[in-house]
Length: 633
Ligand SMILES: Nc1nc2c(c(=O)[nH]1)N[C@H]1C(S)=C(S)[C@@H](COP(=O)(O)OP(=O)(O)OC[C@H]3O[C@@H](n4cnc5c(=O)[nH]c(N)nc54)[C@H](O)[C@@H]3O)O[C@H]1N2
Ligand SMILES: Nc1nc2c(c(=O)[nH]1)N[C@H]1C(S)=C(S)[C@@H](COP(=O)(O)OP(=O)(O)OC[C@H]3O[C@@H](n4cnc5c(=O)[nH]c(N)nc54)[C@H](O)[C@@H]3O)O[C@H]1N2
Ligand SMILES: [Mo]
Image (cartoon, rainbow, N blue to C red):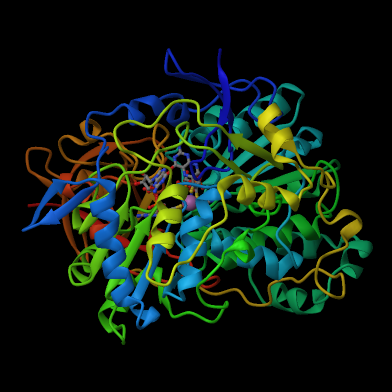
């Protein structure tokens, strides 16, 4: 009998899954309105990860530079002793929690370390630039329900790689196309978008704001502006003044899009019928990523495509919108107070500068040494403090730990979680037992808290789950029985153009920043994009043999300049890595693509040569503004 459970990976599709515990197979839950009976490659092959020979299934303690197996009592005892000592000054404790595991119980480590008053991280690696941009425009993070794109006449997909990052949105787009909806994808190319698009436009990476600006210019010149839309905005004169001062041809040049293509995008938005706008996460991983998102939103708004069915600008929703916290049920620890925050996108220097120094670090759900820019500096800075890592693989972060604690992974422990795309709360049931000594994170945190000299006591798991579900009025029994509950929200966000700013009005961006000049030594841009078959760094070791592949357009002069008989290196101001160069059709001549998440110990981690660079909003990380070149050595 299959068991209904759910994927807890950091992915907006957040699938409800059927797991056969004997056959150890996974398929999508056919009853789930978004999963609709199928799942992606990374979810479908998750048992390979659970059953991997290299999985860590016993606590490990580092002694004289070597990991040795230990029991839980010993390993947790050692962690508790170090944590109790560091607790004399809670700022010397640092919690680095990731989103490798999402869920109500998955919050246990954040809640426990908050109760300890530890240092934490600020800044963001993922989507916060676009979130901040969207909140500036709309006043809140929201979008139409994903199925509403079936009511669109046209869909403009600004850089969302749905074939890899969201196969269920890809399926929705395919359904829409069957009904006659046309899809236009705007991206730097080389992503296979032509497969699911009627038309594609290639944009210079990092510069969508100029293309959107050119479209706004054409709206202004047409004189055909919807007066009702303008009354729903707080600052139209400021945007009009800005667009008036800009030249259409200059805007097209700045994004490397032809005037004809910019006019086509305008036509797509100006024609009758509604246009749904999808905004990918890639275009906000640039130094002006926030502005890119704001100008795209402005096109959706000015064309009257916000607050209507079949329209909408889709960035994301909050995956926590339907779930509450249980932090207030914790006994012991400190009352909530401001904590020291270290900037995650510049973590190496932040750790080096920290005063008082960080003495104890707890890392869970995050391969931080792999995923932050300038990651060698982080690896270096983590050699000093006592480091506990809760993870099941000997990846770049785990290798640096003093103690590794092996967690039960998804399908092996219970939780409840939401999605940043759809509105179902899913139940992740424990479908199979964890191997060896692996234990659910929640149990690990509860025991850690209880064993402290001055204990911090977590409620039991059922109490936490029930508390988290209260916000959406879901009972734990109901969730366990059905495997998911769809929470009701208005299907159209900002209906009637009523926005979440106090005055109910929309905010346009008022400045357009020029794209910074590229260093002539590093003329290409390094796009470290998601891979379809894995999430981030959760890649089997066997798939990381040889040198990592980078892709470049065949007609790129930088490719012609390479000697295939010699070794190729990807070079940035931060260093060089040996790579294999392959060609891909249609990629913008300024770009190089590498799939992200490869490990340092295999020479596959691009973050070794990616510098720390901040985006313009939300303290995001501008990974894709990294200049680079290819050379023979
Ligand atoms: N160069 C470059 N780097 C990037 C990006 C980029 O575009 N370019 N993008 C960034 C983005 S979008 C993101 S979201 C981040 C992701 O960065 P991370 O959050 O570090 O992502 P993962 O590599 O998936 O690591 C998650 C870890 O959680 C562990 N894990 C899984 N389930 C559980 C569990 O139940 N319990 C515990 N304790 N651990 C578990 C996994 O084994 C894995 O090691 O990376 C960022 N890094
Ligand atoms: N299989 C799989 N699925 C995942 C993940 C995974 O690691 N693997 N990660 C999950 C997470 S945490 C995230 S954040 C999402 C990421 O999902 P996506 O946003 O789809 O992924 P990215 O690879 O970051 O960027 C996507 C696209 O952005 C385009 N792009 C880059 N720069 C620009 C630009 O300047 N303008 C335009 N128009 N396009 C640009 C690239 O062509 C690329 O195809 O996926 C989620 N889903
Ligand atoms: Mo992400």
